[in-house]
Length: 255
Image 1 (cartoon, rainbow, N blue to C red):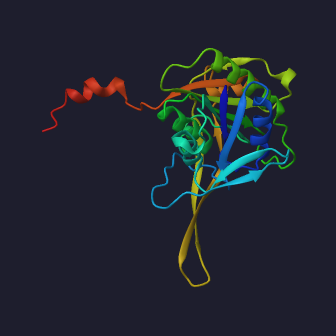
Image 2: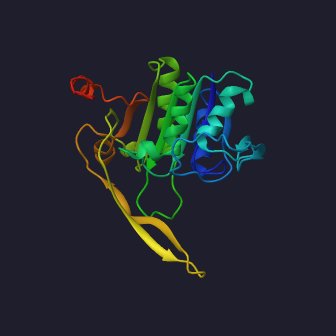
């Protein structure tokens, strides 16, 4: 089996290396990832400029490809033929922070997996719920081991067409993780604020800031699972249609 590994933190991110090293135990791994950090980039398709790709060497001496495009660009490039050998599965990560609730629309990690599904290839996004303001070394190995377990399962029993998996792993030793739960998207609470400043030439500029987002640990949700010490697997699809309101909208007099 041939697995494409990518991320949104950049090709040299330690989470990507831990993921690739572990997945090599179950199949061939190719890496094509951004050459810089694209966190919170969302689903990007670069159309206004050419994309460049170069070969790089990772910390373990293995080779990878790095692009100046977004995570979703990297997946598109690979699946459109930049990597000639057929790819069976795309795994994106390991992101150092959880991607839960509405995060999935912002996350380059998740939207890379979405790009795989658009191209007819199964996709898995893997994120680690590391502590807020954790500046020390992160241990990605438990999440990498679990990602490998989930990847192996998906390779053996493929996902339904059009479905990707959003995997979030609590920041715990492997023997402290209670298990795996299949979940729905939870509610992420954002506390964004606008910070207006003035540059030395008197022109205004802006930062979108505020406190770090929180979440509600509701039973059955992604955050509820990781809060309780479980791995969360949320199946996602790209059809965003609000089917439950179609009949009501059809009944209105739009004229």
